[in-house]
Every structure is written in C-alpha cells, then in structure tokens.
Length: 394
Image 1: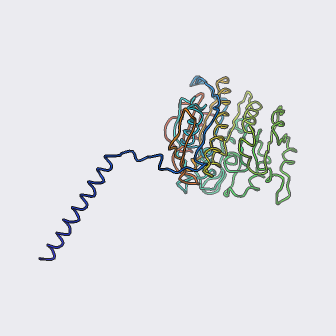
Image 2 (image 1 turned 180 degrees about the horizontal axis):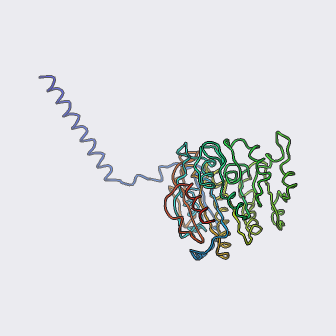
Image 3 (image 1 turned 180 degrees about the vertical axis):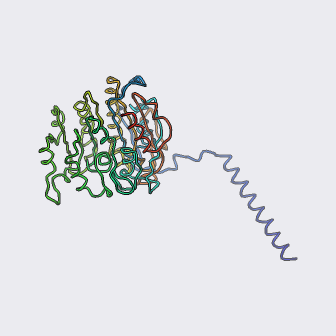
C-alpha cells in the first residue's frame, strides 16, 4: 500500500468521524433550542432585586413642535444605557416617566482615542460638540478649552445651573463649566468654579473646597462673590433666589435611600429660581447610576435610576406647562455590561448579569421632549447631539 493510499484512508476515516459528530450535534440542537436555562445560572444577592411598592408616574402631552425654545434642560443618567432603563422599567411594574418621550435617538459615545469612553470625554462630547481624549474635561485633543452649551447660554444672557450627586468637580458637571487635560486634578478643577458665574451649583465634594493643600477656602470665596451656601435640605427649601452653592458631602453623596431626595429637591429649586424671561440652561445628572453599576449592585443602581426618573417626571410637568422648554435625557456611556436575564413584571423583580465592572461601548439612548423634539431622532455622535441642541438655542 502506498503512502498516498494510507493518507486517503486516514482522511476518509476522519471525515466519517466528523460527520457523525456533526450529525449528533445537529440532533442535540434540534432537540433543544432553548439555550438560556435560567436554572443553570447562579445568582448572588447583588444580581437580584424586587420592588414592593412602585412609584406613580406622570403623563404629559407633547407641545407644539415649532414653538420657540426659551429653556433647555439636559438630564444625563451617568452610565445609563438601554439595559439600565429596561431593568428599571420592569422593577417599577412596566412604567417609567421616560415612557412619555415620543421622540428618541441613539448616541455613539466613543472618545477620540478610545472605543470605550469615560465620563470626561463622553460628557465633553455632550457639553461642547467636540469629541476629545479619554480623561479630558472641556478641552479638545490638543488641550485647548472649548465652549460648552452652558457657556453659550451665558453669552446669550440666559441663567445657568448644574446639579449632581457626585463631586461637583467630577467629570460630568465639570465638562459643562471647567477645562482640564486630567480629570484627577480635582483641586485645580474645583478652583475653576470660583468666578464661573453659574447661577445654581449643587453636588458633593466639599473636601476640595475647604480642605485644600493650597489653604484656600473656595466656599468663602464664592460667598464673597454673592453666593448663598447651603449644606442641607432645609437650606435648599428655604432658598429664595440669587446665586446658589450647595455642597452636601465631603466627596460623593450617600446612596439615595440614605441621602434622601437631595437631587430631586435641588433640581426643582433650580428650575424655580432660574426661570426668567431670557430663559435658562440646566444640566441635571443622575451621577450614581454609574457608581452602582461599577459595583455590579443592581438594587442600588435601580434606586438611583428611580430618583432620576422621578426628576424627569418633575421636569416634564414643568416643560408641558411652560411650552417653550426643550428636554433632553441621555447618557455619557453605559456601565457594567448589564444583561437582564430573568424577572417578572407582575412581581416587579429582576435577575441580571454583569459582564464587567467598567464601562461598555454600545450606543446610548437620547430622549427628547418639547419644541423641535423630532430633531433628535436618528443615530449620531454624542458631539452631534450637542451641536443640534446649540443650533436650537440660537
């Protein structure tokens, strides 16, 4: 027998074995196509959550499309992808205030130098219409300061505000006010708020205002510039007008079930005191949706999203009554690689899986309400979102 004959026999034998194996595989697949057996997954306590009492949502009507825009309110759910929204929807029994939005699009979030962005580059895209490098705040790729939507509003004579639950000198709020090539230069970023002339500022991070290495007391400096400083909810509720500085924690605020409705109260107060004939620009961030997605704790993440959605309801009610307010709800990126793999609408329960403790690079939603809301339908860059908003503010 020749070597060629031996090789041919081996080939025929291997082919026969492979054929049998493929046939067996095909039979197994045909006999059971359900490859998502929930019972095969092991869930920890942080992967499951159930809501006993859902909160009531509001219903609003879309105002006239071509009405003049006077106010712009941008709400950023940090780390809030469609997966976070879907999880919250199930947990609240199939209802969110986000359901009111008739017009929606998708935003691509990547940084200029990385596919998966951070809040600095992602927020700068939203705030300024410029894509920039990972870790850059309010600057372009060359480190040159860029104008944000808030700065543009100030030039137009509009009042402005920022309210968050993270450090006020953290990435997303700073993207609208400050400029830095290093998001970790927190004292330097905090100092930029002095003289920024933003009418309403609220968040955490008091440590970077009063316990500074350079010995400056930024709170005192802001008070000297005419700001009223508050550090509790009573101070928020009693504030009547003027310039406002609220700092409610040394670093980031506590989880929402511990801190109480600080963000909701400051958001409502901001709208109350900023509303005027020339209009206002306000950025509200649900900062800690991201924080708890990083920690892979679905319950904490959901409660942060619930507070954010309640604020959306408050904002929509104001915008419906006003008729001249554009409302944009979006995210700077998604976080956690969250997958909703089981749950019950009737029982308001979920079981989820996280694939990462970092960010992920999928598109995020853009929800629009108010005059020209239809202009935000489609798929586009986060920088394009900013440019569309700016075009309507002219």
